[in-house]
Image (cartoon, rainbow, N blue to C red; front, side, top):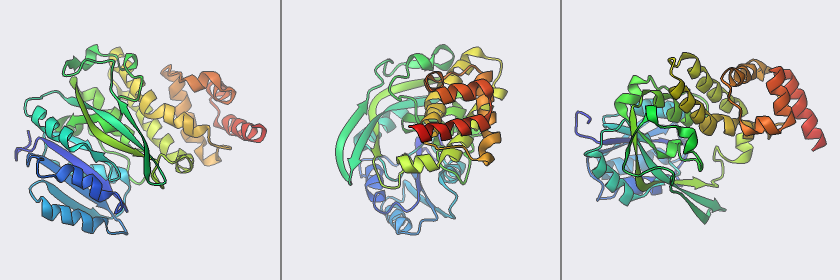
Amino acid sequence: MGDNGKLLTVVVPTYNMEKYLPECLDSVTADIVSDRFEVIVVNDGSKDSSLEIARRYESKRPDIVRVIDKENGNYGSCVNAGLAVATGKYFRMLDADDRFDTGALVELLQRLEICDTDLVVTLITEEVYHNERKVDEICHPFSTVRKNHVYRTDEFYIHTHVQDGEFRMHGMTYKTEVLRRSGLHLIEGISYTDTIYLYQPFAYAKDFIVYDLYLYHYRIGRDGQTMDPEKQRKGLIDIARVVELQLKELDVTPDDEHLKTNQKALIMVGGISFFLDTLKMQKGLPKEYHVLFHSIISRINKYGISPRPLKKKWYFKLWKKTESSRVLGMALRLRSIFN
């Protein structure tokens, strides 16, 4: 537990989120939320009223809310800033356009009083919006595992349980000391770095538990969201840099086949699948990407990672066989012409 008795630190990266931030912070600052909780709102150089809103909640709950105001450095820089000063025994993120279920948060804090696993996994609800109106709600129950059961990571195979996006940032709460021991430092200045938080510390976690708590409510369909298809298409280079970092981690992983198997599964669900989906959106590959993309495909081949799209799509198969980013660029241009 942190020196001041805090059980959980949550960092809220915030950039121009005045429209959504109040709902987010309402969900974690209600009177029923214990003061053994810590919320660090990191204002990433917002040009709107996000900072003023955050200060208002800091005044409302000075016992749990702390605001960091800094120059813009993108998502990873906010997480790094929050982790550097976090005092909770456990640590996790909450995006400013999302929210927690307040009742589930209260229950989680009670369970963390006696929990001592390196990783705690909670359940996710996706809220689908269209034109700012919620049109659907999808719950992810993680039905293939026993709830409230401690699993040893060296006896658990992730690939046999990942069916519905269960292992992703929105459900993961790590011990703060595990994150620091892993040397976690997200790449700054780019997007899509939350998957590094999912992947890198897992090698340092000896055990985990899954709680039957739908804590995280993830908003889908916001204008300007990084998951917006057009923004995703333009973010290919950021996504590729994150995937390369994940694959490079395999180069320094100890000679532990079980761990490597789990790492490959996490790379698939938390990086490569998304990367390949983004690649499908492209109409070519700029020359300046070639070195980076060669690094990715050579490691995919080296570690025997065979995502399904690589087996099905001719341009992926060609890239995999030749390891040539120039060939991939030509293939993508041909595909865009004839599709």
